[in-house]
Amino acid sequence: MAWAQPVQAPRLPTDQGMESKTVGANDSAVPITLTQVLALSRINHDVGMAQSMAKAAQGDVVAADRSPFPVLSSRASSMDLQNGLGPGSLFYDKRIDKSVGIDWTWERGNKRTLRTQTAKALAQSSNLDVEETVILQQILALNAFFDLFAAQSRADEIVQIAESYVKTFQTAQIRLKTGDISAQEAARISIEYQRALTDVNSAQLERQKAALALAQLTNMQGSALGWRIEQSWAELGAMSPSQTQKDATASVVAALDDAVDQRSDVISAKTKADASRAYFELVQSQNKADITWGASFDHYPGTSNRLLELRLQVPIQWSYGFEGELARAQAQLEQSMAQLEKTRLQAKTEILSLYQDVLISAQRNASYIETIIPQADAVLKQAEFAYSKGALSLTDLLDARRTYRATRIDAIGVHSELAKAVGIWKLRTQTPTMSFDAKHSSAAALKD
Image (cartoon, rainbow, N blue to C red; front, side):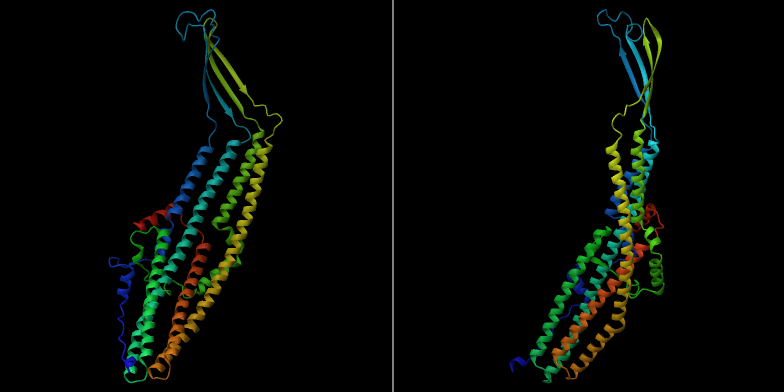
Protein backbone atom coordinates (compact mmCIF):
# COMPACT_ATOMS: atom_id res chain seq x y z
CA MET A 1 0.00 0.00 0.00
CA ALA A 2 1.28 3.48 -0.83
CA TRP A 3 0.53 4.90 2.57
CA ALA A 4 2.59 2.15 4.26
CA GLN A 5 5.96 3.56 3.05
CA PRO A 6 8.45 4.62 5.77
CA VAL A 7 8.43 8.29 6.66
CA GLN A 8 11.77 10.12 6.47
CA ALA A 9 12.88 11.39 9.88
CA PRO A 10 13.23 15.15 10.10
CA ARG A 11 16.69 16.44 11.01
CA LEU A 12 17.08 17.37 14.66
CA PRO A 13 19.38 20.38 15.15
CA THR A 14 21.74 20.38 18.09
CA ASP A 15 21.26 22.55 21.16
CA GLN A 16 23.94 24.88 19.89
CA GLY A 17 22.25 25.11 16.53
CA MET A 18 18.94 25.94 18.15
CA GLU A 19 20.59 28.65 20.18
CA SER A 20 22.16 30.12 17.05
CA LYS A 21 18.71 30.44 15.43
CA THR A 22 17.48 32.74 18.17
CA VAL A 23 20.52 34.17 19.90
CA GLY A 24 22.50 34.89 16.78
CA ALA A 25 25.63 33.49 15.22
CA ASN A 26 27.83 36.26 16.63
CA ASP A 27 26.46 36.11 20.16
CA SER A 28 28.53 34.00 22.52
CA ALA A 29 27.14 32.75 25.79
CA VAL A 30 27.86 35.15 28.65
CA PRO A 31 27.45 33.57 32.09
CA ILE A 32 25.71 35.71 34.70
CA THR A 33 25.09 35.09 38.38
CA LEU A 34 22.50 36.20 40.90
CA THR A 35 25.17 37.97 42.97
CA GLN A 36 26.22 39.97 39.94
CA VAL A 37 22.65 40.91 39.07
CA LEU A 38 21.83 42.04 42.61
CA ALA A 39 25.01 44.13 42.78
CA LEU A 40 24.29 45.88 39.49
CA SER A 41 20.68 46.56 40.43
CA ARG A 42 21.99 48.75 43.27
CA ILE A 43 23.33 51.29 40.77
CA ASN A 44 20.69 51.35 38.07
CA HIS A 45 18.87 54.48 36.91
CA ASP A 46 16.13 54.37 39.53
CA VAL A 47 18.64 54.15 42.35
CA GLY A 48 20.67 56.95 40.79
CA MET A 49 17.63 59.22 40.71
CA ALA A 50 16.86 58.41 44.35
CA GLN A 51 20.44 59.22 45.30
CA SER A 52 20.19 62.55 43.49
CA MET A 53 17.10 63.40 45.51
CA ALA A 54 18.96 62.48 48.70
CA LYS A 55 21.80 64.81 47.73
CA ALA A 56 19.30 67.59 47.08
CA ALA A 57 17.78 67.02 50.52
CA GLN A 58 21.23 67.25 52.07
CA GLY A 59 21.66 70.58 50.34
CA ASP A 60 18.44 71.75 51.98
CA VAL A 61 20.04 71.06 55.37
CA VAL A 62 22.96 73.36 54.55
CA ALA A 63 20.56 76.03 53.34
CA ALA A 64 18.38 75.77 56.44
CA ASP A 65 21.20 75.86 58.99
CA ARG A 66 22.13 79.53 58.66
CA SER A 67 21.03 82.82 60.17
CA PRO A 68 19.62 85.66 58.06
CA PHE A 69 22.19 87.67 56.15
CA PRO A 70 22.98 91.18 57.41
CA VAL A 71 21.82 93.96 55.10
CA LEU A 72 24.17 96.79 54.13
CA SER A 73 22.46 100.04 53.22
CA SER A 74 23.50 103.52 52.15
CA ARG A 75 21.46 106.69 52.04
CA ALA A 76 21.66 110.27 50.79
CA SER A 77 19.01 112.71 52.09
CA SER A 78 18.30 116.34 53.14
CA MET A 79 19.40 117.64 49.76
CA ASP A 80 18.40 121.34 49.48
CA LEU A 81 17.26 121.71 45.90
CA GLN A 82 16.03 125.29 46.41
CA ASN A 83 19.23 126.83 47.79
CA GLY A 84 21.62 124.36 46.20
CA LEU A 85 24.02 121.81 47.57
CA GLY A 86 26.93 124.18 47.97
CA PRO A 87 30.44 124.07 46.59
CA GLY A 88 33.15 121.51 47.14
CA SER A 89 33.51 117.78 47.07
CA LEU A 90 30.43 115.66 46.70
CA PHE A 91 31.42 113.33 49.51
CA TYR A 92 32.85 115.85 51.99
CA ASP A 93 31.62 119.43 51.34
CA LYS A 94 28.19 119.44 49.70
CA ARG A 95 25.21 119.76 51.98
CA ILE A 96 23.97 116.16 51.71
CA ASP A 97 23.12 113.97 54.68
CA LYS A 98 24.98 110.76 53.82
CA SER A 99 24.86 107.52 55.81
CA VAL A 100 26.11 103.95 55.65
CA GLY A 101 24.45 101.35 57.86
CA ILE A 102 23.93 97.68 58.50
CA ASP A 103 20.82 95.77 59.66
CA TRP A 104 20.54 92.23 60.99
CA THR A 105 17.47 90.19 61.90
CA TRP A 106 17.47 88.24 65.14
CA GLU A 107 15.36 85.11 64.75
CA ARG A 108 13.49 84.35 67.91
CA GLY A 109 11.64 81.21 68.95
CA ASN A 110 14.49 78.84 68.04
CA LYS A 111 13.52 79.08 64.37
CA ARG A 112 16.93 78.19 62.95
CA THR A 113 17.21 75.02 65.05
CA LEU A 114 13.68 73.90 64.19
CA ARG A 115 14.22 74.68 60.52
CA THR A 116 17.42 72.64 60.52
CA GLN A 117 15.77 69.76 62.36
CA THR A 118 13.06 69.64 59.72
CA ALA A 119 15.57 69.61 56.89
CA LYS A 120 17.74 66.96 58.58
CA ALA A 121 14.75 64.69 59.15
CA LEU A 122 13.75 65.00 55.50
CA ALA A 123 17.33 64.35 54.42
CA GLN A 124 17.47 61.24 56.58
CA SER A 125 14.17 60.14 55.11
CA SER A 126 15.59 60.62 51.62
CA ASN A 127 18.57 58.45 52.49
CA LEU A 128 16.23 55.76 53.75
CA ASP A 129 14.19 56.13 50.56
CA VAL A 130 17.39 55.33 48.67
CA GLU A 131 17.77 52.16 50.72
CA GLU A 132 14.15 51.29 50.04
CA THR A 133 14.65 51.92 46.33
CA VAL A 134 17.70 49.66 46.37
CA ILE A 135 15.71 46.86 47.97
CA LEU A 136 12.81 47.28 45.54
CA GLN A 137 15.15 47.28 42.55
CA GLN A 138 16.91 44.19 43.89
CA ILE A 139 13.56 42.47 44.26
CA LEU A 140 12.68 43.35 40.67
CA ALA A 141 16.09 42.16 39.49
CA LEU A 142 15.78 38.94 41.48
CA ASN A 143 12.37 38.24 39.94
CA ALA A 144 13.72 39.02 36.47
CA PHE A 145 16.76 36.80 37.06
CA PHE A 146 14.64 33.80 38.02
CA ASP A 147 12.22 34.56 35.18
CA LEU A 148 15.20 34.32 32.83
CA PHE A 149 16.42 31.14 34.53
CA ALA A 150 12.96 29.60 34.30
CA ALA A 151 12.66 30.55 30.62
CA GLN A 152 16.14 29.15 29.97
CA SER A 153 15.32 25.94 31.84
CA ARG A 154 12.05 25.54 29.94
CA ALA A 155 13.87 26.02 26.65
CA ASP A 156 16.49 23.41 27.60
CA GLU A 157 13.78 21.01 28.74
CA ILE A 158 11.82 21.42 25.52
CA VAL A 159 15.01 20.83 23.51
CA GLN A 160 15.59 17.58 25.38
CA ILE A 161 11.99 16.54 24.80
CA ALA A 162 12.37 17.27 21.09
CA GLU A 163 15.53 15.17 20.99
CA SER A 164 13.70 12.26 22.58
CA TYR A 165 11.41 12.13 19.56
CA VAL A 166 14.34 10.95 17.45
CA LYS A 167 14.47 7.66 19.34
CA THR A 168 10.71 7.38 19.19
CA PHE A 169 10.78 8.00 15.46
CA GLN A 170 13.52 5.42 14.93
CA THR A 171 11.55 2.85 16.90
CA ALA A 172 8.45 3.68 14.87
CA GLN A 173 10.35 3.15 11.61
CA ILE A 174 11.48 -0.28 12.71
CA ARG A 175 7.96 -1.24 13.71
CA LEU A 176 6.65 0.18 10.42
CA LYS A 177 8.95 -2.10 8.42
CA THR A 178 7.81 -5.12 10.40
CA GLY A 179 4.18 -4.15 9.99
CA ASP A 180 3.52 -3.46 13.68
CA ILE A 181 2.36 0.14 13.01
CA SER A 182 1.06 2.03 10.03
CA ALA A 183 2.67 4.93 8.18
CA GLN A 184 -0.06 7.10 9.62
CA GLU A 185 1.26 6.51 13.14
CA ALA A 186 4.80 7.25 11.97
CA ALA A 187 3.55 10.47 10.41
CA ARG A 188 1.86 11.44 13.68
CA ILE A 189 5.20 11.02 15.45
CA SER A 190 6.81 13.27 12.83
CA ILE A 191 4.09 15.86 13.39
CA GLU A 192 4.65 15.75 17.14
CA TYR A 193 8.35 16.28 16.58
CA GLN A 194 7.73 19.30 14.33
CA ARG A 195 5.46 20.74 17.01
CA ALA A 196 8.26 20.24 19.51
CA LEU A 197 10.61 22.25 17.27
CA THR A 198 8.06 25.05 17.15
CA ASP A 199 7.83 24.95 20.93
CA VAL A 200 11.62 25.25 21.07
CA ASN A 201 11.52 28.47 19.06
CA SER A 202 8.74 29.88 21.24
CA ALA A 203 10.65 29.01 24.40
CA GLN A 204 13.78 30.69 23.07
CA LEU A 205 11.77 33.81 22.28
CA GLU A 206 10.47 33.89 25.84
CA ARG A 207 14.04 33.53 27.07
CA GLN A 208 15.10 36.52 24.98
CA LYS A 209 12.27 38.64 26.36
CA ALA A 210 13.23 37.68 29.91
CA ALA A 211 16.86 38.58 29.24
CA LEU A 212 15.91 42.01 27.88
CA ALA A 213 13.70 42.65 30.92
CA LEU A 214 16.64 41.82 33.19
CA ALA A 215 18.93 44.09 31.17
CA GLN A 216 16.72 47.11 31.90
CA LEU A 217 17.20 46.60 35.64
CA THR A 218 20.96 46.02 35.64
CA ASN A 219 22.39 48.19 32.83
CA MET A 220 24.84 45.37 32.22
CA GLN A 221 27.18 45.86 29.29
CA GLY A 222 26.96 43.63 26.23
CA SER A 223 24.12 41.92 24.42
CA ALA A 224 21.53 40.46 26.76
CA LEU A 225 20.55 37.86 24.17
CA GLY A 226 23.75 35.93 24.90
CA TRP A 227 23.27 35.74 28.66
CA ARG A 228 23.12 32.29 30.20
CA ILE A 229 22.81 31.17 33.82
CA GLU A 230 25.22 28.30 34.39
CA GLN A 231 24.11 27.56 37.95
CA SER A 232 21.51 24.96 38.85
CA TRP A 233 18.39 25.39 40.94
CA ALA A 234 20.08 23.47 43.75
CA GLU A 235 23.16 25.72 43.66
CA LEU A 236 20.93 28.78 43.90
CA GLY A 237 19.21 27.32 46.96
CA ALA A 238 15.92 27.16 45.10
CA MET A 239 15.18 23.47 45.48
CA SER A 240 14.17 23.71 49.13
CA PRO A 241 14.95 26.16 51.92
CA SER A 242 17.49 24.88 54.40
CA GLN A 243 16.63 24.27 58.03
CA THR A 244 18.72 27.31 58.92
CA GLN A 245 16.65 29.45 56.60
CA LYS A 246 13.43 28.02 58.03
CA ASP A 247 14.58 28.75 61.58
CA ALA A 248 15.62 32.29 60.62
CA THR A 249 12.28 32.85 58.90
CA ALA A 250 10.36 31.63 61.92
CA SER A 251 12.43 33.81 64.27
CA VAL A 252 11.67 36.92 62.24
CA VAL A 253 7.94 36.20 62.39
CA ALA A 254 8.21 35.54 66.14
CA ALA A 255 9.79 38.98 66.59
CA LEU A 256 7.47 40.62 64.09
CA ASP A 257 7.38 44.08 65.66
CA ASP A 258 11.17 44.30 65.76
CA ALA A 259 11.39 43.12 62.15
CA VAL A 260 8.90 45.79 61.12
CA ASP A 261 10.74 48.55 62.96
CA GLN A 262 14.01 47.65 61.21
CA ARG A 263 12.62 48.08 57.71
CA SER A 264 13.83 51.09 55.77
CA ASP A 265 10.35 52.13 54.65
CA VAL A 266 9.07 52.16 58.24
CA ILE A 267 12.07 54.12 59.50
CA SER A 268 11.62 56.55 56.63
CA ALA A 269 7.98 57.07 57.59
CA LYS A 270 9.09 57.74 61.18
CA THR A 271 11.60 60.37 60.10
CA LYS A 272 8.98 62.05 57.93
CA ALA A 273 6.70 62.19 60.96
CA ASP A 274 9.57 63.75 62.94
CA ALA A 275 10.04 66.29 60.15
CA SER A 276 6.34 67.17 60.26
CA ARG A 277 6.51 67.57 64.03
CA ALA A 278 9.53 69.86 63.80
CA TYR A 279 7.82 71.88 61.07
CA PHE A 280 4.73 72.26 63.24
CA GLU A 281 6.89 73.65 66.04
CA LEU A 282 8.57 75.94 63.52
CA VAL A 283 5.22 77.36 62.50
CA GLN A 284 4.31 77.83 66.15
CA SER A 285 7.50 79.81 66.64
CA GLN A 286 6.28 82.38 64.11
CA ASN A 287 4.24 83.91 66.95
CA LYS A 288 7.51 85.14 68.40
CA ALA A 289 8.29 88.11 66.20
CA ASP A 290 11.79 88.53 64.87
CA ILE A 291 13.68 91.71 65.78
CA THR A 292 15.78 93.62 63.28
CA TRP A 293 18.70 95.54 64.75
CA GLY A 294 20.42 98.26 62.78
CA ALA A 295 22.99 101.03 63.01
CA SER A 296 24.28 103.62 60.54
CA PHE A 297 27.03 106.20 60.42
CA ASP A 298 25.89 109.63 59.15
CA HIS A 299 27.87 112.53 57.69
CA TYR A 300 26.30 115.99 57.22
CA PRO A 301 28.64 118.91 56.39
CA GLY A 302 28.14 121.94 58.60
CA THR A 303 26.50 119.95 61.35
CA SER A 304 28.75 116.98 62.16
CA ASN A 305 30.97 114.52 60.41
CA ARG A 306 30.25 111.73 62.89
CA LEU A 307 26.58 111.06 63.46
CA LEU A 308 25.31 107.66 64.69
CA GLU A 309 21.84 106.23 64.19
CA LEU A 310 20.52 103.13 66.00
CA ARG A 311 17.42 101.28 64.77
CA LEU A 312 15.10 98.61 66.13
CA GLN A 313 12.30 97.11 64.03
CA VAL A 314 9.64 94.78 65.34
CA PRO A 315 6.68 93.63 63.16
CA ILE A 316 3.31 94.29 64.71
CA GLN A 317 1.44 90.98 64.48
CA TRP A 318 -2.05 92.22 65.02
CA SER A 319 -5.28 90.29 64.49
CA TYR A 320 -3.51 87.27 62.96
CA GLY A 321 -1.62 84.54 64.78
CA PHE A 322 -0.65 82.39 61.77
CA GLU A 323 -3.76 80.28 62.22
CA GLY A 324 -3.75 79.20 58.56
CA GLU A 325 -0.14 78.01 58.67
CA LEU A 326 -0.75 76.23 61.96
CA ALA A 327 -3.81 74.44 60.59
CA ARG A 328 -1.88 73.25 57.56
CA ALA A 329 1.10 72.12 59.66
CA GLN A 330 -1.24 70.29 62.05
CA ALA A 331 -2.91 68.51 59.13
CA GLN A 332 0.47 67.52 57.69
CA LEU A 333 1.55 66.15 61.07
CA GLU A 334 -1.63 64.09 61.37
CA GLN A 335 -1.19 62.84 57.82
CA SER A 336 2.41 61.78 58.48
CA MET A 337 1.39 59.93 61.64
CA ALA A 338 -1.38 58.15 59.74
CA GLN A 339 1.09 57.28 56.97
CA LEU A 340 3.47 55.84 59.56
CA GLU A 341 0.78 53.56 60.95
CA LYS A 342 -0.23 52.56 57.44
CA THR A 343 3.37 51.78 56.52
CA ARG A 344 3.82 49.70 59.66
CA LEU A 345 0.65 47.75 58.91
CA GLN A 346 1.69 47.18 55.30
CA ALA A 347 5.15 46.04 56.41
CA LYS A 348 3.69 43.62 58.95
CA THR A 349 1.26 42.24 56.39
CA GLU A 350 4.00 41.86 53.79
CA ILE A 351 6.30 39.98 56.19
CA LEU A 352 3.51 37.56 57.11
CA SER A 353 2.57 37.17 53.45
CA LEU A 354 6.18 36.47 52.46
CA TYR A 355 6.41 33.95 55.27
CA GLN A 356 3.37 32.12 53.94
CA ASP A 357 4.78 32.28 50.40
CA VAL A 358 8.00 30.59 51.55
CA LEU A 359 6.13 27.84 53.39
CA ILE A 360 3.60 27.14 50.63
CA SER A 361 6.22 27.30 47.86
CA ALA A 362 8.48 24.94 49.81
CA GLN A 363 5.64 22.47 50.24
CA ARG A 364 4.72 22.56 46.55
CA ASN A 365 8.36 22.24 45.56
CA ALA A 366 8.87 19.25 47.86
CA SER A 367 5.77 17.59 46.43
CA TYR A 368 7.09 17.92 42.88
CA ILE A 369 10.57 16.71 43.77
CA GLU A 370 9.52 13.78 45.97
CA THR A 371 6.34 12.59 44.26
CA ILE A 372 5.11 14.21 41.06
CA ILE A 373 8.33 14.26 38.98
CA PRO A 374 9.38 10.69 39.90
CA GLN A 375 5.90 9.42 39.03
CA ALA A 376 5.93 11.27 35.70
CA ASP A 377 9.36 9.81 34.89
CA ALA A 378 8.19 6.32 35.79
CA VAL A 379 5.03 6.62 33.70
CA LEU A 380 6.97 7.81 30.67
CA LYS A 381 9.57 5.03 30.95
CA GLN A 382 6.85 2.43 31.23
CA ALA A 383 5.05 3.91 28.24
CA GLU A 384 8.24 3.97 26.16
CA PHE A 385 9.04 0.37 27.03
CA ALA A 386 5.49 -0.79 26.38
CA TYR A 387 5.32 1.01 23.05
CA SER A 388 8.65 -0.47 21.93
CA LYS A 389 7.20 -3.94 22.64
CA GLY A 390 3.95 -3.17 20.88
CA ALA A 391 1.91 -3.29 24.06
CA LEU A 392 0.85 0.35 24.00
CA SER A 393 -0.86 2.47 21.39
CA LEU A 394 0.72 5.60 19.94
CA THR A 395 -2.04 7.74 21.41
CA ASP A 396 -1.25 6.50 24.92
CA LEU A 397 2.46 7.09 24.35
CA LEU A 398 1.88 10.66 23.19
CA ASP A 399 -0.37 11.29 26.18
CA ALA A 400 2.37 10.02 28.48
CA ARG A 401 4.88 12.32 26.78
CA ARG A 402 2.59 15.33 27.10
CA THR A 403 2.02 14.58 30.77
CA TYR A 404 5.76 14.24 31.33
CA ARG A 405 6.45 17.48 29.49
CA ALA A 406 3.75 19.42 31.35
CA THR A 407 5.04 18.09 34.67
CA ARG A 408 8.63 19.09 33.94
CA ILE A 409 7.57 22.55 32.79
CA ASP A 410 5.37 23.02 35.85
CA ALA A 411 8.24 21.91 38.08
CA ILE A 412 10.42 24.67 36.68
CA GLY A 413 7.73 27.20 37.55
CA VAL A 414 7.51 25.78 41.07
CA HIS A 415 11.30 26.00 41.49
CA SER A 416 11.15 29.61 40.31
CA GLU A 417 8.35 30.52 42.71
CA LEU A 418 10.27 29.10 45.66
CA ALA A 419 13.48 30.85 44.63
CA LYS A 420 11.65 34.16 44.38
CA ALA A 421 9.90 33.68 47.71
CA VAL A 422 13.11 32.85 49.57
CA GLY A 423 15.08 35.60 47.82
CA ILE A 424 12.49 38.30 48.47
CA TRP A 425 12.21 37.16 52.09
CA LYS A 426 15.96 37.59 52.57
CA LEU A 427 16.01 41.00 50.92
CA ARG A 428 13.01 42.22 52.88
CA THR A 429 14.16 41.05 56.31
CA GLN A 430 17.90 41.63 56.16
CA THR A 431 19.45 44.44 58.19
CA PRO A 432 21.42 46.85 55.97
CA THR A 433 25.11 46.67 56.85
CA MET A 434 26.71 48.54 53.95
CA SER A 435 26.59 52.26 53.31
CA PHE A 436 25.30 53.61 50.04
CA ASP A 437 28.74 54.78 48.94
CA ALA A 438 30.25 51.36 49.64
CA LYS A 439 27.47 49.64 47.73
CA HIS A 440 27.93 52.00 44.81
CA SER A 441 31.69 51.48 44.71
CA SER A 442 31.55 47.68 44.86
CA ALA A 443 28.79 47.44 42.27
CA ALA A 444 30.52 49.91 39.95
CA ALA A 445 33.71 47.88 40.16
CA LEU A 446 31.78 44.72 39.28
CA LYS A 447 30.08 46.47 36.36
CA ASP A 448 33.40 47.69 34.96
